[in-house]
Image (cartoon, rainbow, N blue to C red; front, side, top):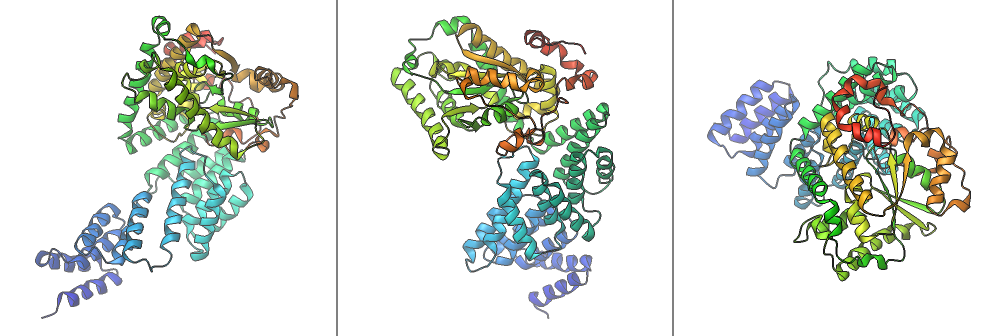
Length: 550
C-alpha cells in the first residue's frame, strides 16, 4: 500500500503536467483521512493560486502553515499569494515570520524592501507624493536585474519616472514592457498617463478603454477611471469625465468600508466645533496667558484644493521660508486637547497658564525639529488646509499668529476635491461624495467665519484666481504681509515648479507644471453636475465675491 508521501507525489506529478483536477482530487481524498496533512493543503493552495483563485489559495496555504508552522516553503507561497492580492502589508508580515523561522534564507530582506516599495508606489497613485521616488527607482532596478522580464516591475519603474516628470525615460520602460507583453494593464495605465501629459488625451482614452474588458484588480480599475476622467476633461467631454470620477469614488468607497466609521467621527468633531464656537463661548474664555508670546507662528489655511499647494510653492521660492507640508505639528497638539477631560474644543476655555505654555512649547519644539534640517530658513509656515477647523485653538495658543487664508470659488473647490484622488482618512473620505464635500466645506467655512467674527485674527485672504492672473503683485502682497517685502523676490511662473521640492499632496501632477489658468472657474464646465450643491455653497460664493451662475 502506498504511503501518504507517495500519494502526494502523484498529486505533484499531475500538478506539474497541468492536470489540476486530478491533483486536487488526490489531495482532497488524503485530507478526508488525514485532515492535518499540511502538504496536501499546500498543494491545494498551489493549484488554486495557479488557477488565479488567490483568496481561496490564501486560506488553503494558511491551513498548511497551521498544521506545519515551521516549513519555510509554505510561508514563501503565502507571501507570493498575498502579493498577488496586493496585500503587501500581510506579505511583509509573512516574510518577517519566515525570517524568524530560518534566518539563513537569502533575499528575504530584499523581498521585504520590494514590498515596502510597492506600498509607497501605490501611495503615489492614491495622492501621497511624500515618497522618496529615487529610493523606489533603486529597489525596482535591483528587482529588474533579478528578473528582466517582469513586466509589472517594468511598469513600476515607468511609473516612477512618470511621477518625476521624466517622460522619455518612462516611455523607454513602457516600450520594453510592451515588447514582452503588449496587453499588460499596468504598462497601459502608465502609457496613458504619459499620453495625457503630452497633450494626447484621445490616444490615452482609447488605450484605457481597451483595458476595461480585461480582468482588473480594484487598484487598476481605480487608476483607469481616474485617468479617463482627466482625459475626458481635457477633450471637453465633461459629462463623461464626471461619470468616470463618480465611478472612481464609488470603487474607492467600496474598497474601504471601514473608513465610513472614521468619516463619521470626523464629521461629528466638525459639527461639535461649529456648535461650540458661538459669541458667548468666546466671551467665556478665561485669561489668555498665551499673549505672553512675543510672536506667533505662521499658518497656511483654507480648504483642500483651494490653492494652498500653489501658495506653498510660491512661498518656498523665498530663500528664508520653509513650508511644513501637512505635518503633525499642530494635530498632535489638538490631539492632546481632545484627550482632555473637558473634551474639544471645550477644553480651550479654561486652559491654565502651565498647560498653555506646555502646548506652546510642544508645538514650537516640533517645528524646530524641521528647522534644524534647514538651518538657513528663518521663517516657518505650517501648511495644513483642514486645520482651519482648529482656528480657535490656534488663536488660543498663538494670538499673534499670522494666517494666510486661501480662497477659491467654492464650486471649483468642491469639484476639485471630488475629482482628486486623495490618500483616504476620516476627513478625506468626505470627498468621495459631492454632497458630503459641499457640507464639509460649508461647516469648515462656518467655523472660520465664526472665529474671524469674534477674534482679532491677523490674516490675509488670498484668492486663487487673482493669484494665477497676477502672480507678481499677489506674491508681493503676501511677502509684505509676512514682513518680507523688502527682499524683492520675483516669482517666475515658468520656473516656479523647478524651484520647489517635490510636493506631498494630491496637487502634485498639476503644480509640477507651469502655472496655467485652466483650473480657474473650471466649475462652469460642470455646472449641470454641480447644481445639487449650489444652494449649500451659495452663502460663501457670495461672501467671497464670486458669481453663482456662469
